[in-house]
Image (cartoon, rainbow, N blue to C red):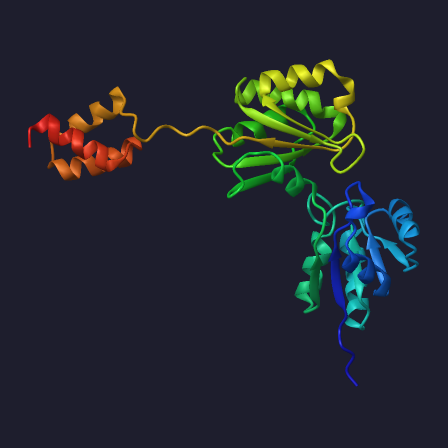
Amino acid sequence: MTTLAGTLFVVATPIGNLQDMSPRALQVLKDVQLIAAEDTRHSARLMQHFGIGTPMTACHDHNERGKGERLVERLLAGDDIALISDAGTPLISDPGYHLVRQAREAGVKVSPVPGACALIAALSAAGMPSDRFAFEGFLPAKAHGRRQRLQSMAAEDRTWMIYEAPHRLLECLQDMQQVLGNERRVLLARELTKTFETLHAAPLAELVAWVAADSDQQRGECVLVVEGAPQPDADAVGDEALRVLDLLLAEMPVKRAAKLASEITGVRKNLLYQIALERTGE
């Protein structure tokens, strides 16, 4: 008789407020044969609170590849396993990627049990465009690498987010101010869903001063939500765009010149076409 493979459940847990634990997540954690936890000692308190006695095993950055092979063997033998991180949704700047990939490559069903996620919670309350966004995880701990990463994101026009450790928060914000300028708007979301939850948005110059003046704002888990870079006004026709247009008009028909000038300068083609008609008297 062939044993049906089990399911790997990727289970989100609360990021602070235990009431955010979903009924489905509780049932899955009770029903599976094993829970793979980032830190079994940390998660033991969560299990004790909800009266869950399912056995746990550690699955973290340092053992995930080797442990994943053994967990997949159990899944293939028919066991259901739940993967959890210390808080929030696994794999979001937390371990689990290798296990999930190994399970999928082995043909094991992987089922998400959605719930709390700090970056989505912060974005939902930031008041910044959320139809398109980017997540950069944790920036490099050292200043040089951090500034390089920030420079690579400086022109990003989408809202973007990072996680930051509390002891590096002020340094990170100061680097942001240096790279992105004083006026870029950033939201600090700290201790989300917890007693001292803080969501404070301001231009970087103001936010840096606010955090520097209050050491309490340099404690707890932090998400930074960064406003996308302002984009040039496509209707603004500068001297350079007009110079390009005039050079092209000297060599080709109006329609072709307007099209190429638009591609070169980013100014709207229809606007350049109207200007070209006026300059040529057509």
